[in-house]
Image 1 (tube, rainbow, N blue to C red):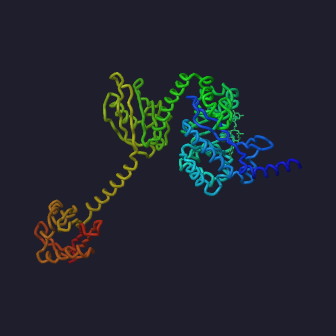
Image 2 (image 1 turned 180 degrees about the vertical axis):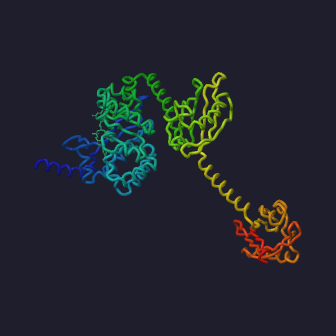
Length: 525
Ligand code: C2E
Ligand code: MG
Ligand code: MG
């Protein structure tokens, strides 16, 4: 009975808390674990209750969410945090990244993104100075919430995934949402330097964040041991009581310098720290290179000679996977492990040539229906070839097109070479551009004798004027015609022909050429 009364009372008080100005924002610094500098703060709300004193957020935020008061409270938090950030900047402090926690209800507030934009404008803050901390609990549905978050991101505000690792879907959100910063939950950080499982979880989370090109911050850092563990494992940032509890704005400023001494004093020495990061950068560059090679369309491989055999020492690229292979199929293997023996022997000749120092060695091949062309170039160390690097590109599509073209051409050739009809191509000036081999059989002159000439030269004088007229009309009508005429055989005899001439149109619909098929009809006559 009493509890319910208390709860009701709290709700009553919460209603009035905003207008009575009982909310306070405390700020907890976030530190760069390499430089030890404060690079941002998280705004955390407290309620200064007239009777109960300072109430922590977890005791009233759930109620505020339930009742919907979180909407005006959330706006107050955002505006106050932005104003404070502006005030610090005006007072000459370096620009800080302001982190503000979001509740699910706020994402479902109509025009939430619009409201954020307005508040940023009113408080004169660039969107880059703001980072929203969201948790998985915010994702009440799979459509609306992600859409709002993407919209926020698109206006330039950053997004941080809070309490990472405590929900069910953390990994899903990492690929679904535009996350800038992963915040490792304090429950993992707490035991990271004492419990092997926690240690591994924290390490893997940091590594994953780096691979995904996201920043990573550890929350709840309380001890020196945790700090050192995080530094050694390349966590970018830290937040926790070791550095500072959440403080009212004026106190934070007061302790600013002291807070920035903590890492210099308790962390691993600067020089050592830089060294660890340099190693990481080198490893990162290597990793990036490997990924680039893997993601490129072609394929890169290397081989060297061992006891008279060419052994592949490297192979990767999308082409390899298209061939149905993986690096394991190639690396440490010879050509004969990959190809049938005849192909292997053939390709080995090219390998040999490049190994002997030959430049511009290239050859074609096929694996599992994928055609490729490879070019090899020797790499010399101290004037001696120590390995050969090869680059392959996929030519399957070209091969397919070429093959189709070749097939078509051979079919045309079969037709034109074996037909008993006369086939010709004629331009609009009545000049012949092509005459089929059948001309020789039927008229006695080889086809070359016709090309570049007008067919009228061989036509019976009684037919030629009529045919010229018909051709001229066809240029205008653009319709095929059928006609008859006589042509002179090499032996002087006249042969009767029946002809169909078809105009060929260009892209503008104008006659470009004529295709003519003429048949010897002297028998019929
Ligand atoms: P959070 O966002 O995960 O904030 C971190 C909490 O851990 C804060 O508790 C902070 O005071 C506490 N903390 C920081 N460093 C340490 C440490 O070294 N050790 C330990 N044990 N705790 C540490 P706080 O301020 O009580 O806030 C609790 C939660 O309330 C926050 O969790 C956040 O989810 C929510 N919250 C706070 N302010 C707001 C707000 O303005 N809006 C909304 N929607 N939620 C808020
Ligand atoms: Mg938070
Ligand atoms: Mg948290």
